[in-house]
Image 1 (cartoon, one colour):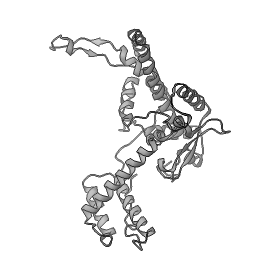
Image 2 (cartoon, one colour):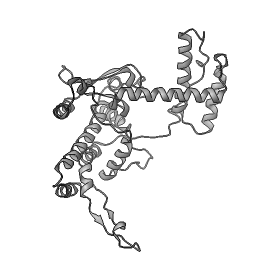
Image 3 (cartoon, helix red, strand yellow):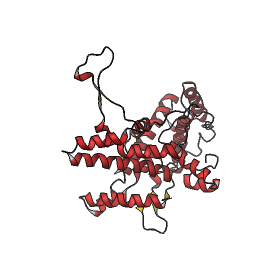
Image 4 (tube, one colour):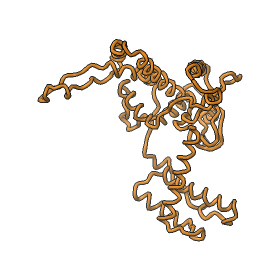
Amino acid sequence: RVTQELNETRIRNTQSRLKRVAAECGFVRLSDLSGEALTRWLGTQLAAGMGAGTRNEYRQEMVGFANWCIRTGRLSVNPFNDVPRANAKADRRRKRRALTESELDRLLFVARWRPLAEYGREKVEPTGNEPRKRSNWRKSPLTYDGLEVAVSLARDRLAGNPEFAAKLEQRGRERALVYRTLVLTGLRRGELASLSMGSIELDAPTPFATLGAGDEKNRTGSEIPLRADLVDELRCWIDDKRDSFTGTAAEFSNSPLFAVPPSLLRVLNRDLSAAGIPKTDDRGRAVDVHAMRMTLATMLNRAGVAPRTAQEITRHSDIRLT
């Protein structure tokens, strides 16, 4: 189901881009397709502030469409082959940084316990000239040092609702495992969301996760090796989910490994705040979900892993990216 939803989203995005370019370039018939017109249009988008990565995606959609026309006998040559790609590296809009090991430890701890700790936050009275009525009270922000106290208070407050408390603990366990899996595999958010219970092979000589070609950025499909400590956690996670699953074995195999929310960045930002980790450093580099891949690459580099091996692990098409 997850794979189907991801593929449907990609199809909608492709259709939207093709229709936009066709409308704004005046492409009505196949004979209208023109590399010069597309180049001018991309230049207009640059002037309007469109990033290099997005411009390259539009270019690639048009190249792919023309290649399909060639394969099906509708065109003899691709009119877009000579349209230059934008230099995405020189036009980077977002600068990321890797997490340090201590920051990663703090983030995983906060992710594990924040869902429960949210129910242990103390109320803070209004300050200044605010009326001291109940609606003006606020909850105190969660901090790394105060997290354990908040967890303890939450357990006391939810003592009469143990099922809900257990649900919150399970949510935190899953979130921390999502972060760990992202860092230790180099998977992108969408790639991780596409994994099912049946795509994890833990009993192979080298345990791995199977990533389908339709779910991978480079569309080739991969077997992602899994570290021994991550294997242990995934085994416990899958066993626990199997024990509580009420469907058939086939349905369990096709069910998502994790419930990865589309709003994972917003969740991460709150976890970073509670962990006391700056979202942006003094050099303007930010931490986001994709920075988990950068954290993996940085750890590989510091461990002395050969660049070619790091390229294989991160599945980069060009070692310059690594």
